[in-house]
Length: 291
Image 1 (tube, rainbow, N blue to C red):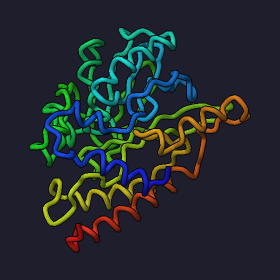
Image 2 (cartoon, rainbow, N blue to C red):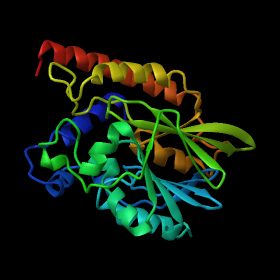
Image 3 (cartoon, rainbow, N blue to C red):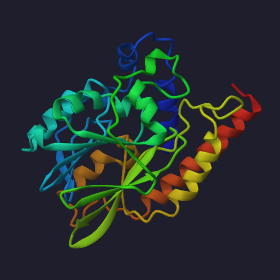
């Protein structure tokens, strides 16, 4: 799936369609957002525990585990089952992280926090949306709401979260949300050191850019994000939606390929360029008032 087709798909899903609650909206979401796939070890201590369409990541350490994103509210149980299927215990999840405060990625955090008692680390820009369970800038749209979840610690740009000798770095890549966070993590594969990025997003999706922006400074945030992404040296690319990095295609190749197919030094730069082009086009459309 191309960036353009995915952006169009996401815009349609998040358009709301006038639905009064999350459940009807989810019914109109892509089926793979809730479809179950078998969890698996992706690279080093990174395991995939999400659905077929929405990612969730278990990062294991000798002193407990880190869970990054959950997906929709109803995906919490799916993620729990996947963690257990891999032989890990839910009680060992000590830290929760989030890429961004939208219902399709943060929706299940409240359930997992309640069941694990893990500490949630999140950016200042997304804290309010997480704690209110709303789509920031479109708070009146109840269709985009999700269960509110308290944030235990606010993470700053370039701040780190460490557990059991494993350290993730927060890279604030705002625009898609005010606190959109792309996390980076050193990993080993085939005897070599790599840097994985759990890319937040840089799509416009349902965001207003002009004349009444989703939040103050959103356009400049997108521009800063594109510049920032070009400075990050990451050669393992993950994202919040599986289509963006061909999760299942690469998984299928793992048995046959000698090298880990998730190692791709070109992916981040390619995705950044495609999202920047899409943003530039959408900004021009909104400025021109084209419906």
